[in-house]
Figure 1 (cartoon, rainbow, N blue to C red):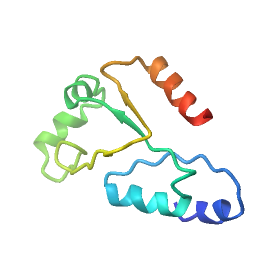
Figure 2: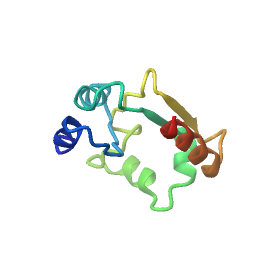
Figure 3: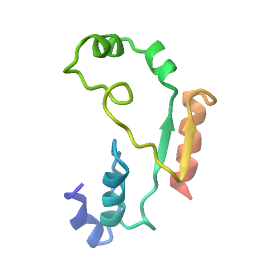
Figure 4: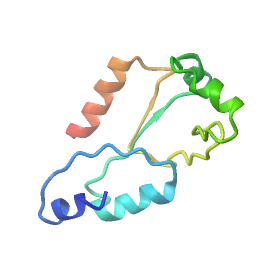
Length: 107
């Protein structure tokens, strides 16, 4: 994230996908980028669907191994309170989610 600061200060546009587990890290990102330039898109997926689609069996491994800290299972996750866009994967297909996200980024 700190590498985007010089780009941002010179008015360049940098598209960066961040996976942030905490609200405080997303807030820090917003301060660096500028709240008027940052879009927070929350891809929401119920834990049950994550487990069903887990081809690497990561959730099964995490439930058996104490040292494996899998987000939402053992590691905490602070869901965004007010994202610019929330895409619920239980309601939208991948294609619909991409379309919604692209519309948010264009506007």
